[in-house]
Length: 311
Picture 1 (cartoon, one colour):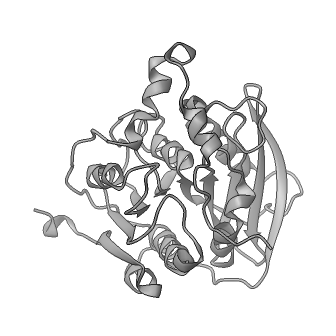
Picture 2 (spheres, helix red, strand yellow):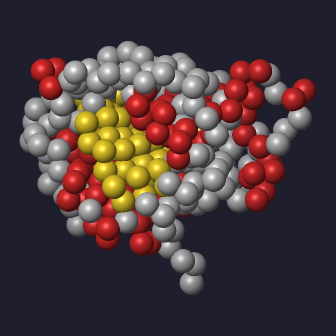
Picture 3 (cartoon, helix red, strand yellow):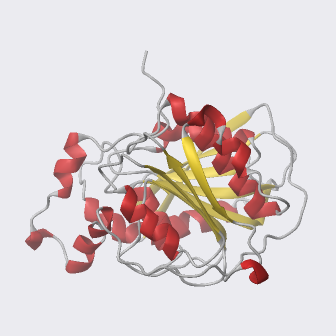
C-alpha cells in the first residue's frame, strides 16, 4: 500500500529538470527559480488585514469531487474540484501543485479543507505537472495567470451550468494556496500578477515570485515550511515571511523537509484550515492549538495585530 503523504518531495528527476542550459530560457524564466535558495525581498512592517465578519458554514461529513476542462490561450488546465456536500455557500481555495506533481498527490490535505467547509479547485498545469510530455520548470512564470483564469471559471460555475457548484459558492471569499512551485505560483498572485479578488494565501514550501514584492490590497498570508528543506531553503521562506506587508503567520516544521508526512499532517491540516477560517470570517485566530498537534512545529502568528500594536 502506498504510504499516505501530504506533499511530495521534489524527485531526482525533477531536480534534474531544473538544470536547464541558460540558452533554453529567458532571464525572467531563470529568475523564477533563483529564490529557492535565497530571497532578496526586504522586510516590511505589518499593515493589518481585517477579515469580513460572517458566520462560517459548519464542516461536513461528505466531500464530492468533480472535474472541469478549462484552458487559457491554448494552455489546457484540467481542474479537479473537491467540494463540501452541504447547503453552503462555501468559500473557494485555488490550489497549485508542485513540480512533477498532480492535484491527487495532495488529496489528503485538500479533502481535509473541503471537510472543513471550503471548495478546493486544483488545476494541472501544462508544463510542470506529473506525466506531461513537455516538462519545463521555467513555465512557472505563466502559472499565476493560469491560476487566475481557473478561479474565474470556477466562480462562473456559481451562476451558470448545472454542475455541483451552482449556487454553492461564496464568491466574495477567495483564497489561493500551493506547494513548492505551486507556492511560487501563489506568491505571484500576490505580487507580479496580483489577483485582487484574493483575501488569503498559503505558501507551503514556497518562496517569492521573480523577487517581486507583495502588492495590492491587504490580505492574510500563511507560510508552512520545514526547517530541513533542501529544495527550497527555510531561510529563503523566512525572508519571504518577513517581507509580507500584511497580517501574516508561519508554521515551521521542526524536523520537516520539502515534504510533509503523516507525523506532520494534523498540524499542517489543522493550522491551514484555521487560517482560512479566520481569513474568511474573522474572530479570534485559532491557529495555536492546531499548530501544537504532535509537537512537531512552532508558530509565528502576526494575524490579529492591530495598527496600534505595531511599532
